[in-house]
Length: 241
Length: 320
Image (cartoon, rainbow over all chains, first blue to last red; front, top):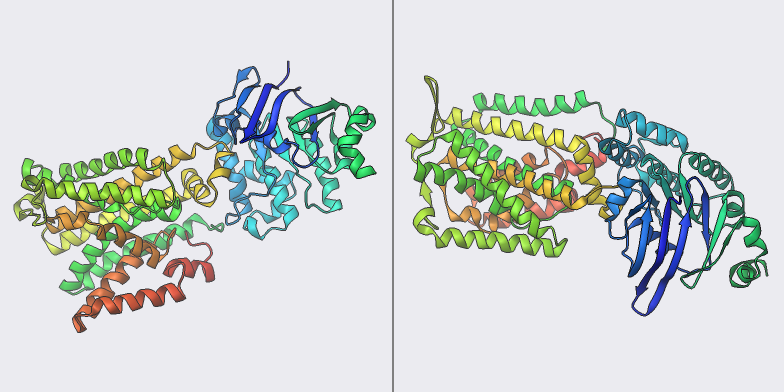
């Protein structure tokens, strides 16, 4: 049974159909990449999944439950975590406090056990930020802020982790580490990532969904997507030609 | 907040309480009375700071919570002949109930709209006090007799009109509220409140019901401010509509800004400073408000984050 499905999901902004009748299914444990040209509706689509914006019509089912109208904070408690495209860590709080917020949430919900401190340090260690626990997040380098964002997502103990352009602005060396990190996360959670960096997508994704003009243009394994003529026209063609 | 040892933090705050305790025996009569007043009003500022400093919600209606406590305690003593402890509890309960009702309505807004809505409710409350002058005394106010301000426990009796008892009562309330706010801001709840101030949208996406957390903060803030108002009525024996006027909504904002928003001791320092600047300058000239104004401008220029906020930024990063 899929972990997440959408049925005829749409979101209109005025006359613009940002997401237009999308039927989508995500199997537990997979790493799914969403690609597509700018303005294809990728971020709007995952924002609908996370509850940051409400759909105009259609339905979202997570783990058998209809979550279409559920407020975002309740979806988070069910295990749908979202990391932001534009880094939005709490700049004035320390890295420690940034991660303590999601950790204490899972403790309150009974989804994890133990002390706040040990949970925070575990998440910081997994992302290589442990020695920067006391640094205000705003003073971290950009790459480290992105990692902190992932650490916060991780600390929520998500069943579905949505990453919106996680490698944007990272150096090549940081990207390699990041790929390893996502593989590690995927052992315990389903990962849905929007990504522009094609080598990262091809390395990581089990399956790829291609968006164009608010609709799903194609879906398949990396190999199928690479050889799909329509996709090449709409998207890959532009980068390879 | 930098990682500070809890021992150091608590030692500092207990030290401040000990200092205030010692001052009772050193201060001349006049200043002893002034300090009692300042400590009672610093509680008002601390309650305001909880909402303004930590959650980032700027209310212009906190005179309502202060005077809910003031009248809740004062009227039950005056009309119903309640004892001091019951009246105090009644005052705090009034403030908490008002905060619940106003919070539910006002939290549907944010920013400037929140300021306007809270101010509007406070004005309604002020006008109601004037309208029901037959019970409240209106702008004349009511004086609570000395005989009503004596607590008897068993055989012992505490006369709140006695300067030392009054000072110690104000100090006791101040100390309790100081330690409560310190514990709150260091708690998980406090961390969520600060997160809401910094970025509410992000806090939601970490699984927090930000509206419920803000409502809890409004109620806590309202109850603390009401405790201050109730204590003020019982310690100084006068209740009047001026305490519900818009001036008393602006004052705590001023005290907190001066002392340092989102610092635990800032409200005390701000209240102390304002009171003494006013007190000293009014001894020299009738244009004392001019001097107070200049002092405020200088402070804002050189300590833009308030006295303690700037101290924390420059020297003591661990200050809560």
